[in-house]
Length: 492
Image 1 (cartoon, rainbow, N blue to C red):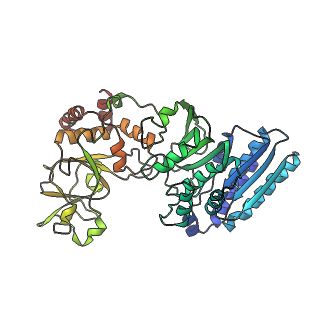
Image 2 (cartoon, helix red, strand yellow):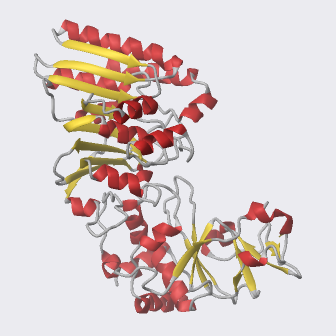
Image 3 (cartoon, helix red, strand yellow):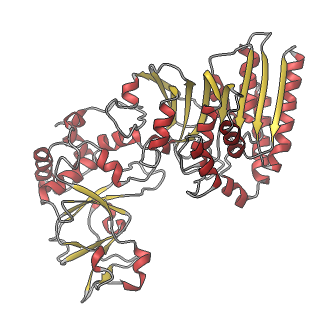
């Protein structure tokens, strides 16, 4: 594609984006694809049959179809025919889409290529599930998509219709993605840019199992900057580009990275599929091993359960006990602890903040409290551009001498049968979790800023003896810097 054409389609994308109703855009989860990303996605396709049939659901202004057509004109034989099926329901975008499809057809005519297209102005999920439910045999040789991102309500018609054809999912993007796979013929190719969140987490496990049973992953691309792939939109998810082949034998997977949508620093490596989906992993997590992880992590082989430990989300949901908030601790109160109480890694309590420092103890609140003890706490949320995902702290009872503590919902709490754990063990866990190696390992299978209790349950840790050794070392240090933590862990 010429630079002039690229600037034109990007200018139209920004123009269309500005014309969209922000409320409606948010409701539909609309984020349009920059041309550089569209071109990269289209470049991943390898088959160009004489009857090339492209599906572009949620086509927007046609950026992905435009990039695909460019590859078709370059790589398909002169006798090959191209039929394009696009789905779009947004009136603002339909005008641009028609214009681009007409341009593609004119280009085909100029090159003596047969190009046909159709614009289906109906809901893709409703239309596709209806056809599949009645055994419709229409199949595509290619699918390219940037689907909408929005949760699907449990009792919605979309959820019910998807379930009827065997697709269990909780978000529009996986619904579109799954339907595109289902509508692709054997050895057909699918390329999508989607949030990484489906790669792990309990909610997406049925979808992962469904997907991996139907398609082979050939290529995964990740952007190192969370905010750059869709820099003109407020997209909080970390996006990946995934290329799959329907009903193909699974082989090696290419994993590539770039800092942003320019692909200026593009790098790639090949991995066996066992490095992407662990053979013994019942969760079927999809790992993206973009970095070498070794050193201290070679000694990890134990789950929290095997260590005799448990992890729970902080029991106190603060807005539900708002009437029992207290600005400062006093008689009849216990500390209500939030992540901001551990600024800069140490305890800062009480703190000047809009949130309370304490909670009144009574019949309504007592059931949410945990007894005095030593606990390892892990933040559940981090800012999208923070350098680390995992932040762990230790609450030592010597610092807060109260009979009970209230741990707010933004923490994960590591404990033993809802009691505290030995101080050396608590400090060892925090030291380990705060290491760069662990943070890098976590990024291999998690694409979002949230650290869930389930994520921690599925992680591997050193032995209890080793963790206690870590803790003893940590407690002797006057100040723990990141460099000191990393050097210690890597030396083990």
